[in-house]
Image (tube, rainbow, N blue to C red; front, side, top):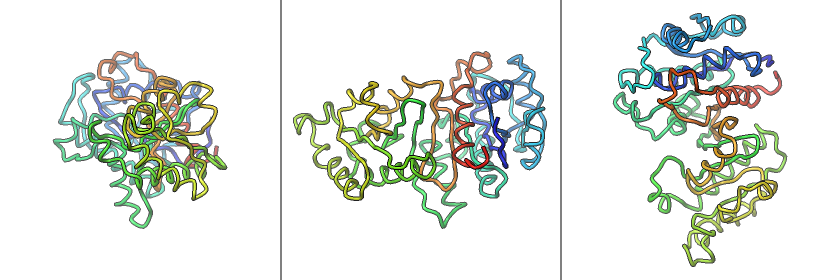
Amino acid sequence: MFALKKPLAVTCGEPAGVGPDITLAAWAARKELALPGFYVRSDPGFLARRAKTLGLDVPIQAMEPGDTLDHFSKCLPVVPTGRSIDDKPGEEQTETAEAVIESIRACVEDVKEGRAAALVTNPINKAALYGAGFTHPGHTEYLGELAAEHWPEEPRNPVMMIAGPELMVVPVTVHIALKAVPDALTTDLIIETARITAKDLTTRFGFKAPRLAICGLNPHAGENGAMGTEEQTVIQPAIDALRSEGLDVTGPHPADTLFHPPARAAYDCVLGMYHDQVLVPAKTIGFDESVNVTLGLPFVRTSPDHGTAYGLAGTGTARPDSFAAALRMAAVLANPESV
């Protein structure tokens, strides 16, 4: 078990999705899963009702963050957001959007004020939040805004990583349409993403000299310009610049030959040019064990690497493995000396 000095702050996520389910299931199996102490910012009554729906014996107790570690072994601590939530698993509810957004904001504030060691976010449905003023493509971008608000003096450039026991990947462009990728992809963006990745792999993950493999954009990495020129005009200049800084970087690699076991032995992390190029293999190889980690922020944030899964919500079939892995990773990255 972990011996954290501060608890982890967990957001409520989309109430109609599996976030509540995996949170409750993880607490119920906290000893078997070797979980650090955490609390949830949500509606205590809502979580109590979902626990009943799932048939889980999870005592829910409303309390403040500072009291949570003392009570975690006996109950799931919930810090009320002040907003009630109806329990309607599988039914998207736009009226819960403000509660979801408030939970994220409050948890980030908890980390800033020293009430929590790190942030673990449950999955959200962005479309359900837009009516409440949410304007971001995803969690990663919103957390970058909150970092700018609460840590104005700190550098922040959020970078998404999916980290699993066998593969770690970073997409250079994230939540944009595939047709927009070539225009969004620049040499400077690749350089900045690789720098942040290498820095966090060193300072937070403990790599002495991380090895980065960089994908090409086109099939067969462009095949010397026959299938596209971005490898020559955009990606290779970035690789050359990164090597000149002393970073261990290789590429551009054809993505279709980069993820089998012998290839994975040659690097520590892959940088892909677009979301699905690297998230598909990462989730295929380690769907239940992989964790979404946001690099480049002045605080630690992790998340399960899956979505809201409306079809599983309230059924008791959602597995808490990725959520549990996110909790354990957050504890190690944020507070390694205390575990």
